[in-house]
Length: 133
Image (cartoon, rainbow, N blue to C red):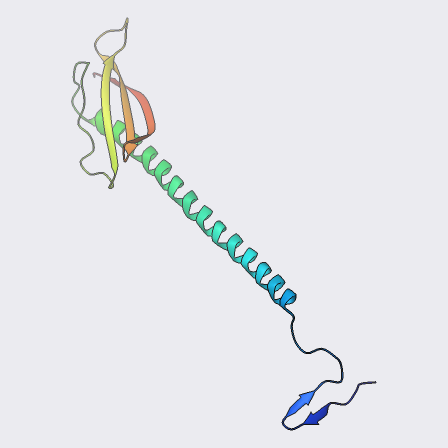
């Protein structure tokens, strides 16, 4: 059985004693909403940071492998030598190369070391061999 509403002027008044939300309920609701917002923002930050880390790693690996192939296409230089680097690099990335002779071997093979850095921080060092053919 439902209780009828009383009409007073232009307002309907419920026969129960509820008059609205209390301060405690409002504060609990605000706390729950703020926890959800903080969780959402922290997940956005984590995602953005992960994308930046993956960009650095993938770009460094691709640059290092491209540099090794570029060195192999250049003329053979007697070690110790430093080969030319790739002509264009993404902003902030640098590549250094070093060719060194292998102890106890002839002069027709050398170890190539390629180091990729971004903003002064070393990201990857890759080594391979170049043969004089």
